[in-house]
Length: 142
Image 1: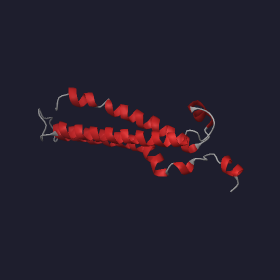
Image 2 (image 1 turned 60 degrees about the vertical axis):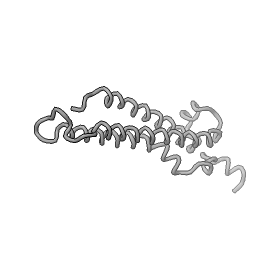
Image 3 (image 1 turned 180 degrees about the vertical axis):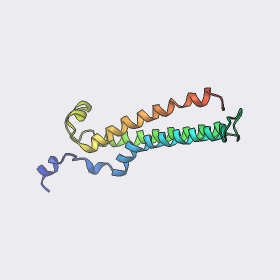
Image 4 (image 1 turned 120 degrees about the vertical axis):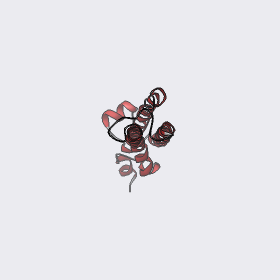
């Protein structure tokens, strides 16, 4: 492959980052958030409303601790996805000319774009997971 053809590729630094890292940075945080929301809602519902009447106290002990553990796991996954995505972005940030504004408007450098989108997504869902913490802390079990 000639030098001109290699630089004509829309993602010339694609070999610097792995596909797994790009996809992990992009989808791990939203997936962790969705799983934590569904799991914590299901646990709360089953602990406080197992039958036809709501209970005054959870049906089984340790519901809050289990929900907090699930939320902490989502935060860890989101943070690790942000770190992986940021590392991928650092490896590919010079893939095409221009800054992040050019990246979003022109769309060249798909490895750089996926890494940048992964950073934004992971950080956004980390913050979204953080917004779930006050509910566990401030709201009573049932």
